[in-house]
Image (cartoon, rainbow, N blue to C red; front, side):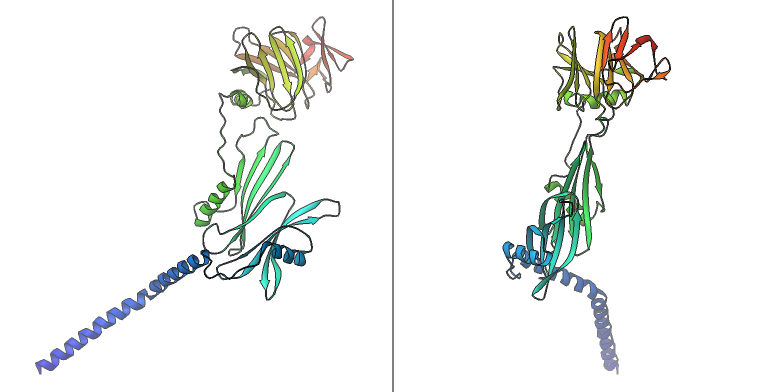
Length: 378
């Protein structure tokens, strides 16, 4: 009797253990299945990257002919590719003529459907497209379309990295914009993105952006004469009236644009360059300084005249007034700027020419005489 009870007890224990094992397997089956799927995907990705499971694809020349047959426009580049599921695509860079003799650029993706191809995505651009490439930036077996746009105008430029993911049906962007119209604007371009940085795709896009020359470090060295106008704005802001700090640099001014006007008084030479600040150069000391840096790059110094070495009257291209710069008597590292918009409470007209005549008077536009003492700010 005892033997039968023991047998039943052992059998019951075996069933319990088996039940526990089955419960463990069932509860972890999802995890095991997930790990197996990951291993399977990694193996498939490895074989795909080694071209071991990818059938031969069409050549670039054939891809270009197919693209023209579908899009009927000038094909600048056609890149055939496949994804890990062996779907066949062609990334196309095309030029679309406009009715006014201009043209737009367009990026298209063609997908193979049966023996033919059909357009499944396109992006039109009014900018110039400088490159088109197909890359698997995040190594998931799905190729992304990478193309770069750029454009420029008077005093500004823009450059955009575009990465289109067909898997997520999203166009990711890294945009850099620089405005040179303002001499007080930042030296480093403004960067805009439309994705989260601390994600797998975000890190992959950042890496790709660096590869294509985006996100470079640009630093202003305020002690370098190349950045003299930045130093002036760092010390004085957008000041038009009041005392200003002057920083002296060794040698002649470092400029990038053509000379507009030059005035030499004793050992001091005043320089006005197109879209540059107003420079002064002291020959006896071989040093130069920025006397005034306008905020707007097109508002550079147009005319100037001087009664003596210590004082300069000047005008700017877009302002309807006269500036008066004068060195501080006791400290040559300080100057004072006054911006006069009126004389005898009358508005000063747009100044196209400025001359100095006797008795502390200025000749404006060849026919208007103004006494310096009659200049006022309002």
